[in-house]
Length: 254
Image (cartoon, rainbow, N blue to C red; front, top):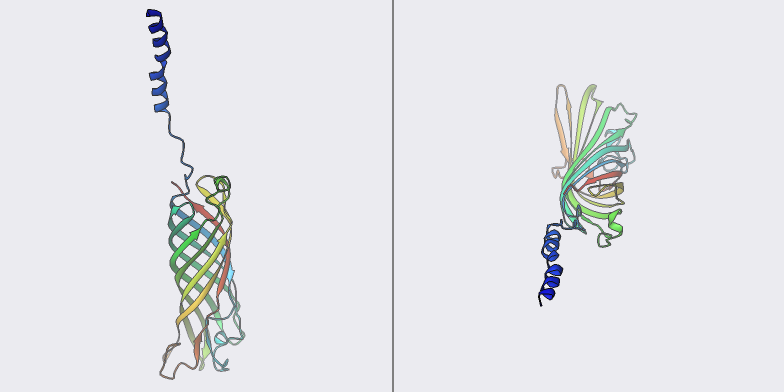
């Protein structure tokens, strides 16, 4: 009997120590690490549109500056950057706020137009879907996405031109609601950093546009697309969309 108790105590004695060691072992890292939480994206881009002004005059009046004519395209590619800050609620879904800026190259028409410049700014909301996020194998390195959103877009142009023997300064602003649709192919460089190419097309829904001219000794002239007084001269806002391609740099730090 004593021998049996001795053997039993010898066999059971290591168990408490083994259980303690197992209890002290760190828990395995979550398979969702860096696929949930804060999401910060920086995206340098190059893009463009139709090349024409978002605000044009119907009939291509010969009296209007060439910039306003729908058959004149003085604008080329636009360099810019975008930033997004959001939250990845689930490995497959994230949403947040976004802001974008673009500056266009410009070739002034040969009608006396000088110092032609154009840029656009936008702010809005975005949502993304990550279709490979449910694959535990693929999502370790690949994290492609499709995205959409809604944003307010302000487009501003300026130039100078001789008007009635004086140098007039023109300022043009258009306001629109943009619907961006994009796709990206991100590669997970590290657990928390992804990078890859992306493209986006923005459907423009114009709201209003205005143009004003200032010249020494002449009262300011201002006309808008929603002007119903008969002074607008057929000024219309274009619904042409814009596109951009860029490099997405996305950080999910937690």
